[in-house]
Image (tube, rainbow, N blue to C red):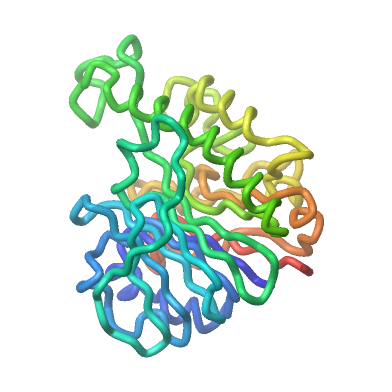
Length: 304
């Protein structure tokens, strides 16, 4: 099975830049998408071709939004909000449907309607796949220096919010993994986690220790959710002790040309599924002027 995760940074913009051609060329069986950034009524008709769509747009207009595309109709769909747009190939309706609620870990309620989490049970394999978009966050108050930040200082509010999310999401991950196991399924968590885990995951790691997304406490949290018995970073397992492969580059300057990137898009799999990986990497665009998004798709082939 070929499974991909892709932060499209706006599905309408990605369509204009070649998303449909990428989808037809790579032919993944499953695609987790983040930052759709479109109301259900604004998703371009036909952009997903012959795929089934499950989409939680969230309540933040023009922001977030997570989806999962599958070749076969999924057996079940779940979101934190309890609703999703569900379309078969060729359908164009935009009415959402109510789903069975997902019991949320303590502390996740404030994030439930932001379009950050969607999971489906695949019909063709005993796998539950998750599309996840984690908050970007910010700097703690003591690192905020007016005049040296692109955003106005907020006293650490965005940082505090992200840390609340991380604490609650760790509990939710444990619950999701145990639930999948009780159902006889493997768990595959994919998406933009907005954290570069190790020095090999960010090009300028020495200068990034005081940058959101590479703060020591964020990387410590990442350590806590991975282990050979719980979840495995399958791309890093395939590419140990090398820089990258990066999945995000700034639009600014020559970051893409010079490969000054971050690896913040992941496949995190339960051990048995992680052991079935035969190939893993990023579909880096061939040139800066041909980029579909500021992210690249992360594509993994599983012999499962």
